[in-house]
Length: 241
Image (cartoon, rainbow, N blue to C red; front, side):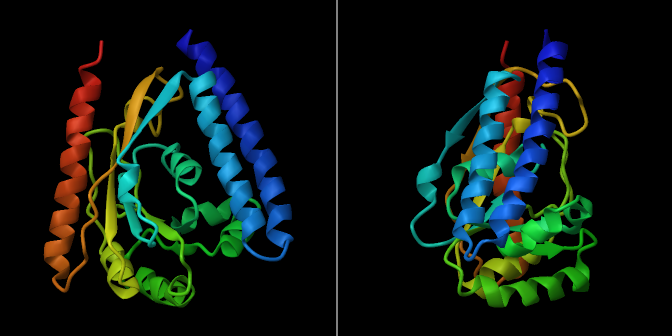
């Protein structure tokens, strides 16, 4: 049964993704960002529906009250290809920092550019910093929340990669609080596995923290908060029958 549901979800996922890539390209041609923003939001909501209806993956959203009216930087754990889709279906309005690997897909580069995304190299370092500075001019006048994945990589449940300091520079230069996000979505939609596991998973927005002036202290605090709560969610998820 899992195989059949996973197959149906995979087919639907790609049909919807290709369709929305075309739709969002058309919306990106229109003046302003609102038409494209609505298209991206609708794409996320559609995939979230397919996750529940076909794959049996239910999302337990927690802590959304931590997203205030003032824009923040959302620093999230990244375990699944479903993570950013849940984010764009939940947070409006939303800007995002994306990896340059996405640009290789047809139409995506054009959509990201119109959406005002900051596209970074996953190599990090000075090149990534320069791109953040380039995008900062646009983001400073942008009142949307900004999503970034500090690790720059997908991680299996229980795994972590070094946190890149771009999240600190982003929050510090924009003078915005950082809302950490923990999740155990990888238990249901593994980054590599074809089979999706029907279950309820958690995406939890945590209490905001301020970037401050001590970069190293902030990075340690952010990592401890995200990884600590993610580990708790994974343990709780693995305890399900």
